[in-house]
Length: 386
Image 1 (cartoon, rainbow, N blue to C red):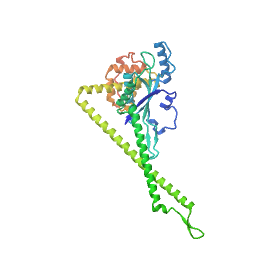
Image 2: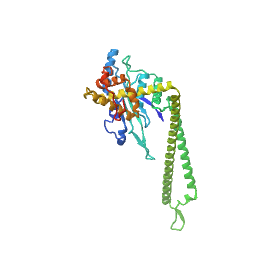
Image 3: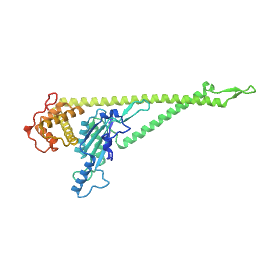
Image 4: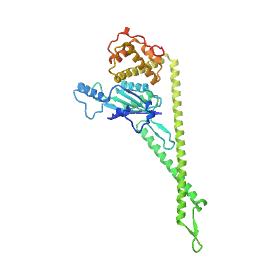
């Protein structure tokens, strides 16, 4: 399955759409609970922050035609998690200085196939990003190879096939349309030949109505003959359309199944190679473990910030309540992103991480000190140590 990412200027109603703040007639409400959302800051607040920083850094106002906040639609798989997209957001920031501050996963959009009446989901995610260059205060300037890099990072982080680039994609699309037109022409020719054959056969003679006139001669009854031919044409046309619909539906299903098989084969091959390397090379294993724990740490930090954004005013001076809230955040992350709790345990073994995350949750600032001795060992509801 191929993925792609394309950033455009953010729309005024993006948050309404992305976070389902109102009902839309093109979504399936029964699937909306499967959506996932993450927000670090509102778009309006981020734009104000960007404008203020631009004035402070450059001494000038942000240009009116600037696009300091942009939004991308990313093609994802059914099992793509928020953790996968958080990893992508981190890579975009590390390598292209693009800072994602909102993510919405949509699994309630799609369409019903006209022929098979089967629901075809359109799995995708919306990434809203800060496009400001922190060195100049102006918007980031990217070249064509940067946009190609975005596609590479997206495919890598989501473990999907990269979309076709530029001219190659357009060429293949044109060739595909030509093939479709040729196939349509072939079908039309077959229909024409079938009709012509049947109309020239003895069967067509049965459609001709002759009746005796008042002198006893056989004469062609034009009205009845035309009526018979019209009925015959309607039947032929209906039969051809029905057969064509069934053929198209079966061909489509076969193509989809073949694509899924190829995709699964690639994934199995990739996982086998990766596991072989991990089991045989301790250095690679350590590197992959660190990379994974870093990604979990990143999503944990973002979720803490989001938790403070959702509930900015509760009393967090009680240490036990604070630690209980942290435990609940950790359990939610594990449940929603299929993260083993052992990864959370590993992160909280480091006392610096414990201090930093609790400070971030309590004060909204990870740089504030929090007494190490005041942090008891936290366990989850199953008695496992965090």
